[in-house]
Image (tube, rainbow, N blue to C red; front, side, top):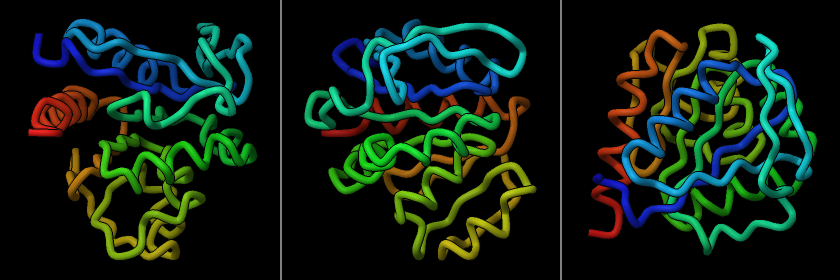
Amino acid sequence: MELETKRVILLTENMFNDLEFWYPYYRLKEAGATVTVVGSTADAFTGKAGTQVTADAGAEAVSVNDYDALVIPGGYAPDLMRRHAAMVDLVRDTDTAGKPVAAICHAGWMLASAKILAGRRVTSFFAIKDDLIHAGAEWVDEAVVVDGNLITSRTPDDLPAFMRAIITVMASAGD
């Protein structure tokens, strides 16, 4: 289990893409990581397809110092997440610490709000391409892009490549 000692924040908010939440959740656990679900509050959240998850903690109660990486699922949730300064701060602080930050689909909105895209190479769902470019990113249409500690992906179809990249980057972090 390549991530046995790793701790990961998995962000959530209402209207998350169910596949983009649950696939990373179980794949990270399968790899041995401890996954902490973090929402704007420690409440229940509902995905676009109707699945529910209860956050283990609210963003204000979590410190990046206690974790090794952060994953942001897409859907419409990132637009709701970025309305909470504590959630945006978690993304920015994780990136500033040089720890892996992974975002898929519309999760690029959180990267833009955290102001961590200037000069970075990324991908996303094509509909937010302009938002990421305006935030200073170089946008490309690829299944997964790794730029240092930043890992981005486009859609649920790219989840296998996205998770392979996350696990590879996490397993080598701190070496």
